[in-house]
Length: 124
Image (tube, rainbow, N blue to C red; front, top):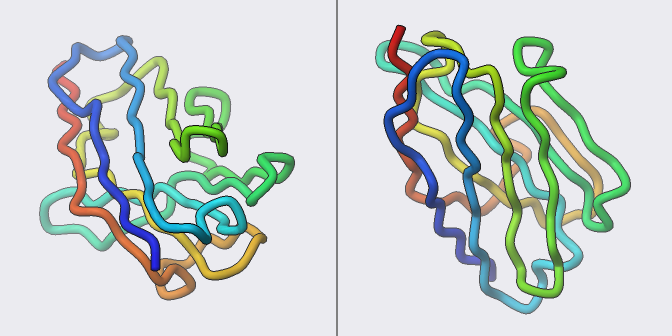
């Protein structure tokens, strides 16, 4: 079992930065790939980024490549999403999610455990 709690969301101006954190608990975390997803009002949940259990493998949505960076610290069981050059279209509730396997994935149904989400609002 893995529990996930997101933090770090907030209101920021376009061009600014935020760092989201996903604190996890559960003995299987170090073997789990973790992803970030987001959902804007009236839209479907979409993939943002994912990281393998070791941190050696990452995947990003085209819309965030070069602006967002996912990382993890298995010693403290936290996954981070550094978001730079934020745009108004990045506004959404951001969720972290964990798989039962080590490799990254980009589809929401491939993730078993989910956090409650944190709101990110980017003003123009």
